[in-house]
Amino acid sequence: MTTPNKVALSIALSGILLLGIQTEASANYNGSTFTGLDLIVDIINRDPGLQKRVTAEHRDEAAMAADSMNHIIVEAIRTTGTANDKVISTADTRELNDYIFFNHYAEWMQYHGDDEGNEETGFHLVQADGAKTKLFGKNAINKVADGIYHLGFETHRKNRLMNEDGNTNASFATVGGWLTGLLSADLAAGTLTNPTIQEVVGSTGTGLDTFIGIIYSDPGLQKKISTGDMREGAAAADAMNKIIVEAIKATGIAADKTISPADVQTLSNYIQANHAAEWAVYHGDDEAGEETGFHLVQSDGAKTKLFGKNAINKVADGIYHLGFGLNNTGKRLINEDANRNVTIKNVANWLNNLLAIDMQNGKI
Figure: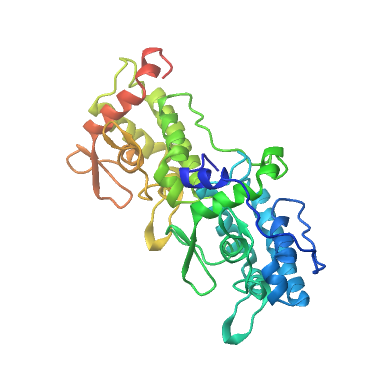
């Protein structure tokens, strides 16, 4: 749940353009979420193309299916807290996709329906059946609603949602923009928020908190991973930051207001001796196709630079190998797989830059 990308913002701010909704509704099923998503149900009821080509009974069935999916979307937004910042970002859209797929896949399949074997079911009773109404400059039913209603199918790390046939469809960024536009009044009013969910904030009060802000704001992570992954990665980073601060204070290595390569060795030894097991959990790994801990954000598309290097994949990850020990020369840290990694000289330089103010004012 973070700042939306430019694509999502431009779509959301484009406004809702409804064309051709002038006839009386003949279908009877009305939207019941009391949010902007009910507009989709209203369009199903009133679209002149659908009134001409689709029976009232089928419009009713499709409207009920759309309303059911709308309820699941609202549940997902509230449960995940993705509306807390009043925008549905690309990362939020991935989070919604994850939630719906893992919690409502079977029923979503039924509600969305399909058009295989010359038989239409669910929402597909009106999709690609002559709808004319426009929304965000696109066909409201065939593009916008159908795109949103692919939120319940299998999740993945590519840029587009997958449809019921496993083919790529609307992008996560575009769907986030459409949801932000449709739910603009609800988002502004705060009726979709979840006050029990708070975003991770750096808690050390030192320069190490920089990494938490970068995780949330990095444009590459915004595009490639979910809000939930960012939250977990940030929480893991904050936990390791607190251990680093504890280690600096316990060993007294910052008494001279600088951190040397030898001090990095001391830090690594302290963390290994006192926090090895929990550090391994916080740092995480990406074995067997499953990411955990900080690895939920490491090597996942981050772009932000720090000290001329990738802030997440090089600087943070390098520092976060402090808990795994040193190679046989003592000049490099090793990673979670016991392979040599960043030099202790580089880690010392990065820590000196990140913690310069804290060391000068005696905070650590």
